Image (cartoon, rainbow, N blue to C red; front, top):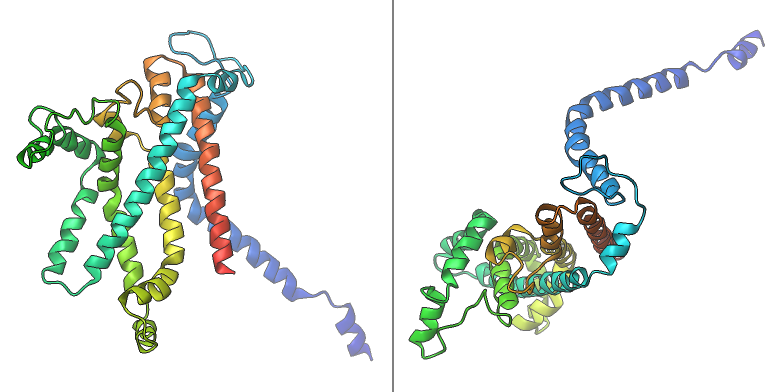
Length: 310
């Protein structure tokens, strides 16, 4: 009986030891993560927080006084600015056009590269070339190709009897379409390689079963390949949409937003407000608006991914 009473009144030692182990493990984990976490906080989160706060101040270049808090004045000025709405509209047209055209062109190219062709390895290597070229170099190269005087694009048109004096990047009607074509060409490698990897991951048994059921090549593509690619398609189109909406270097070097603001993407608008006109508060407010738009894209993407998993 005394043994039973001692066992009931004895303190539980195992939970105390486990709690100490958890605390020690958590501290060690933080020590291990800190060297990686510290640069992220210093160079990503801190500047982002500074930019968000700057959007609520009257910060301007050339003023030797500390910026003061002005509430929502920057946003009121921004939403009443016609050029802001025009750049926002152009940014959406650019982002959706490049993403959609890039997806269909990349899907066709991925299906072609998946076939048993001669020199397939060479074709796959050539597809990756635009990915290896920096956006600034891509823009300079295409400026030369689209030059109205000596560009090879106009020379090729003239060789087949078509008009050969088109000012692709300087004309109001052709500037945005020309920039969209360059954006599609520049972004195709990443989308193509991602879709090609997805196509090659589809089990061969599924294609064989569909063929036994009488499905042809088109039927196997519609009923086997496309459903298997659905998660990849959702991910790649959403990420492409975000990247394209944030584009800057390519269009900045190609047209700098011209002619007449026809290619003025939101990032170019914010750049001009900050570094041409010195309106740092207004430019930061524009950046905050873009963060909200991108957050909406991300929410749509996460909801689609969640629905797909269910």
